Length: 142
Image (cartoon, rainbow, N blue to C red; front, side, top):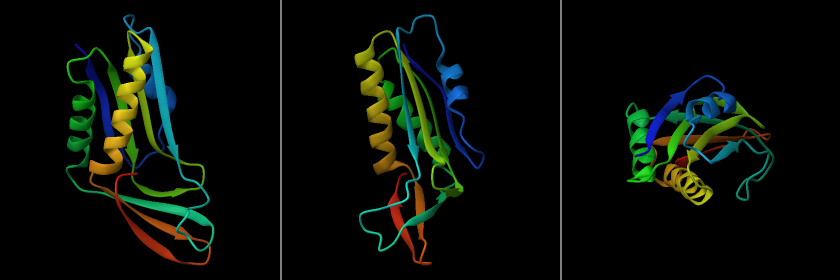
């Protein structure tokens, strides 16, 4: 049976190596990762994006734990996932996911499920700041 070894909401920079270490396991023949970074553009933005400001509901860490547990289900995957809060500049990691599993298909599937569910169900909001001073609040997820 799989497990969630890390599910965190953090104001500190996210460390991919820490997530990889959290899922290190001799049963794992595959490890997948996903790093969601702040980009300098958005299709709906009138000018360049310079920052994202993330805020989270107090229950966001528990929600992230549930998202990861549900993605693993009855499988054998091991998950480490974190979402950042606070002000992030272009290039900063907003989400880091590492998934280890006995085989690659499960690792890829669980990783994709975690990020897609974060986008629709994690109570985290972002305020997108553009270089012209425009700021727009965007919905759930990262």
